[in-house]
Image 1 (cartoon, rainbow, N blue to C red):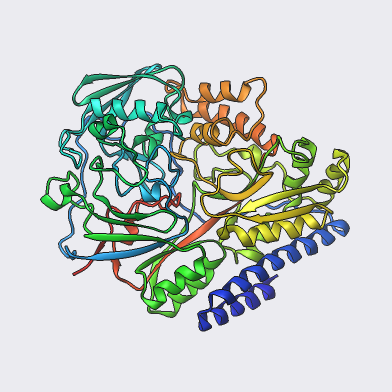
Image 2: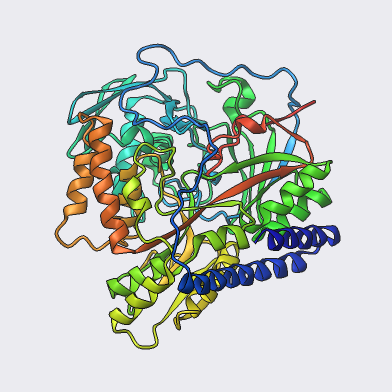
Length: 570
């Protein structure tokens, strides 16, 4: 294995030398074949050698996250960052990203990376996976059915409307009732919103509620001017003066790019966060593959690129060679996964789905395809998260013989199904096709355009994509969005998972009690095998050095980045 990794490294470095996107794509295909070959080799060895189970060592010293209920600041005022003195006030920045911009309406667009620029949120999620104040300065639960938030008094929307408790109420009602809203399921526990005073808003809860501080750090907490909401104008192309964030839309080309310009508040000095929005003009461009994004930086066409998946290795090698810089990180709340639609044959057979969970060699994917830049996963949450389940870690580990046995028990003859994927996931799709082919499973691959919703809407058998919930730091959001809500992947005929999720979201129970409930829920989800968790990928934000403050690039732990504190030096 060691020699194969060295050979792989040499091949990738040679590919970079010629700057060929097509060559890099070929390398990706070769990596998929390497992963498949590794799985087959390991499977053959498994037949003659007793399998040894070793616990994967961790080298992280990161602090384990905590279940945030009350405000971490109590009643004290939020401390804001100081504005840097060395920024260029006329700077422009071009950024390339792995996903295409679709709607810019936060209630319709799951990609907050295009709406974080436009709308501030009630709370903020820091890189240590903790929830911090943003537009809400503090919050508390007077009882199990009530959440109260105290709000900033110095915030206005771009149209001049003042931000207050009435604005919060208008936004929550909109997200709950708007046709096509993807936020309904994560806000379903809010029965009503009460304006206590201009600076205090009270949420009356029909169930749960402990998740809301984390939920409000994403799209559900984005604030739009109530005047714009009342007008009924579509926000698909931008905020139309209703933004609360440091930028607004200059131009928007769906599935291609968004050009942002500083909001009126930043320009006239009235924006509440003086360290944010210091880039005068910012263009976010969609490029489908990481080799394209790497080469765009090298050619000078863009200043900053998101490099993902199998291409993080060559980006890191370029940084090591000199002339480039960047930030290398592991995603914590975004994960490459295989989704299975349990209502479509042959995936409606639970035994067959469980066979797939045993059949895929995640270590081979991580090492052979991703060069070690993807941490194998048995579940969504890593060991850094308070709701990580030790029991699930021991379920459905790669076992070639067990997979073959379950395929036979399923009674399915010549199993065939189709996996849809966007360009970013072509390599793992090919690798899994090869792995499952070793068991006689005929996997067909169907490439789809970015933003395709065929699996979500029940029109596809399976999908390789990212498991990345809005406000995903709280487990109830993951469950309500992917398993019981929008994606509706989990069969829950007796409602037991829904009931347990509501119980775990009770703000009056302890973290230990909530973790125990989620442990049982995640074991049920694992047993249903509607998701094969593959690995948590690394990302590199790659640049030549123009961008300052890259270590304060918000929300990178989930890939839903917030560029509010980036700037360019004079």
